[in-house]
Image 1: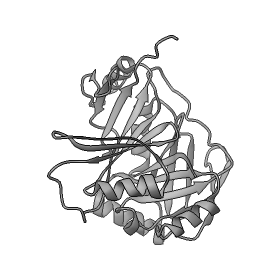
Image 2 (image 1 turned 120 degrees about the horizontal axis):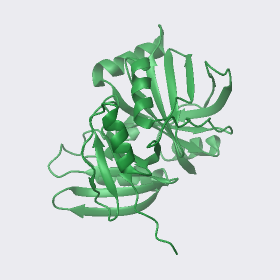
Image 3 (image 1 turned 90 degrees about the vertical axis):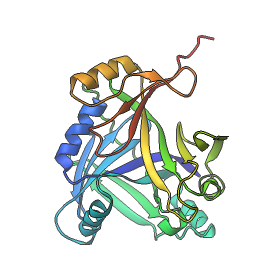
Length: 282
């Protein structure tokens, strides 16, 4: 029923600075800018999902809620939004599985530059039923415009989003049995704990449980994002030249991958870049 990860939301107190930082990071231009309902939003749409930057705008209940989250949690990754082909069926499933969905609402957004509009239908599960993670679900018929590449070494797509949990059985039941994502990996190791992969379109929701962390009743956390690149050496050189704090390129845990850590310029979101293994000719 879930077709993919439609977008992730990153809160920021300075939308212009955040937009400039992510344009440098992605080497892609913003695809959308809109204001309304107490929020100022900038969207970067890559090959398989969108990153939405959101900041409070003006006065009102929604602007106050955004400011309250920023005051309590600071800038960073705050929610996931899954795409579904039938929001009514998705809502019924969420309701039957006691995820307490909000009523479906219809939303419209207008791009401040082009004047184009996008419309969708959306609901949200109650956070007390999702381990504390803000999960949204939407249906839309229109495709968003892609973010135009501005230089070589750009980011191509999302590889995975990381959720940390203190209750892996609860998380496995949520993302697998209740939301219907395909569990592709469930592995434990004495050094790094339990690791679960759930396929979501062509990316992964990665759920981690570290030994010795807080007890089971603690809330889950969105821990970070991993993005794909075609040539990690070119991306490393580009980001280093732009003054972004990055690690050296190293071998990834998955055989054949190469990775690097991005230490700044992401609004507080822990960020990893990965170059997938080379495809062997058949």
